[in-house]
Image (cartoon, rainbow, N blue to C red):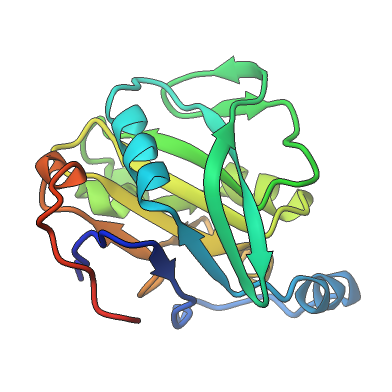
Length: 201
């Protein structure tokens, strides 16, 4: 599934969950589900461009804290702050915590080729949360997690609600959900004002 880049703000909505087996919810899990009513993430086009260009040039993972505003059940992110990084490698990153006002935590997955041990055959498959990613998202209180797959010919971005990570925390890796990712045909469209808006989700 592919969405064309919108010239206006990108509305990224919650999609259906995969059919993977899920562990029973604990009382703490239920409290998390009830305490985070945000269901939609909106990336401003300029932020999407900057994240995609940044991910394309990185050969190791980094973390950014995405900030913006809240309107009803929607988080609108426009800017980012980079926290201090304690460790950064091609497949792992350990940042200092983001500020409390952070609405989403972004990190990149550099594409280095297929990995049969995780069933990764294409860059799109790498738009997923690993078990260490899931532990970090669950342990934090930030409503959304965002991943960009970098070092590819096409920008790929996907995202999850924290509650989705909580419910699926026992899986080996959590793939992207329908309607919670987008892929551009090429980097040329990042600056092409003629690209028409994507249809409303």
